[in-house]
Length: 394
Image: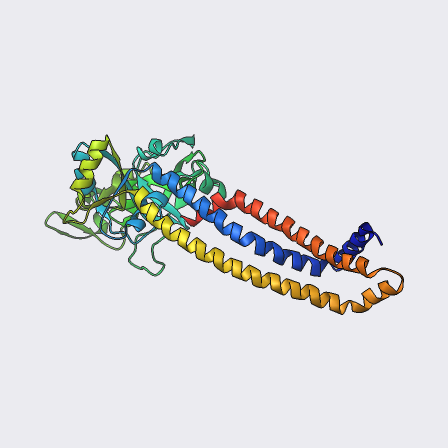
């Protein structure tokens, strides 16, 4: 029997037992694809993180983990970071050596981060509105392209902030925010973000509120007591959870805004000399305020990531060796169980060499199918890796 006939016989057997063939090919594909997949994901994470860190010279923050501060400021992760105050950011601006873009990253809307910032953030990150306009008042928000598409939101719709704790009875009501604009897709975490003005985040935080008018002319029935010029409303006072044109003037802040919290600030030095002077000034401050260089912290984080990658690849290689050994046993047992089949083929005149060729072709065809599936898995992951990394960093 020719080699073509042996290959045909092997192919017919594998097609006849397609479930067994698919299981063996899939196992081989996973063994081959997993180590490559780990490397692809690590490289994609490195590329994504380095690109964003390279565009961010310095981050102003407080004591605690520098890596947590970097992840919060660059990727809007709600980390356990001690906040700054507005006054501390104003102090840096007053030095005249750098600009600062504040970021308040504490709240979310159904897992999407709500980031309070200033309008300077958008040209800095090369973001622009393709529908509607930027936020112009308290309670407005601008959506990233991905979150708008995912939730089918458009200009004029509304988004509700999520409460920090389900069982927080004394917590602040969810704020109903008006969508005024949608940003162009940037291919970064900004696409998954809801942007608002800093004051809107303080409104969500309960540092500002709006309610019915308590003046004698319109709200006499709502007053519980008056003392030292303060008016205390009773339980009938209606608190607003949405800012509108009619009630906008009824919102007011409590306390000194210089003490209000901000998670971090992106610092943009005017020149290299100013950057060096600022680094020295914030080296060991008694209040714990400090400057972090994202590129340096990223090198530390990636060093840990690469060590973990090496351990993962070594573990996968060991697992792959075991899987190949099990596959060899499966083939050996299959050939032993088919001994009567091979004996019948020998009885009708097929040579021993041709029967050995049938066995070899079965292994080769299963291996080729495994390589094909592994290539498909790797190709798909290579296409999805940037998106997966971006979502994992949020």
